[in-house]
Length: 77
Image 1 (cartoon, rainbow, N blue to C red):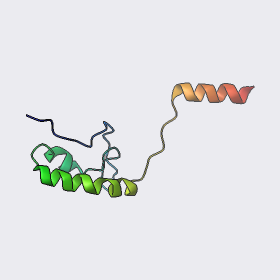
Image 2: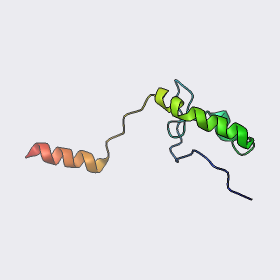
Image 3: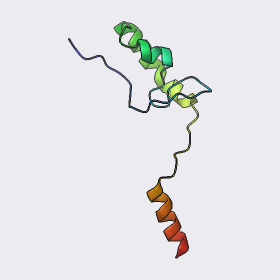
């Protein structure tokens, strides 16, 4: 049995404004029903994803402890 292609990039968090996953652009319903979709329906969803990802609001990345310590070290000099 061939593997089912998936747009998942393991960034699983949904934008509350659009309802699309920040990583792949699918809705929660599409994510949960992906395995049961026909190949044609999966291709339709895949075709929509680039446009969807343009609409999600990118959340700023949190500053890591390492980055914060480096920044503080650099400004203290």
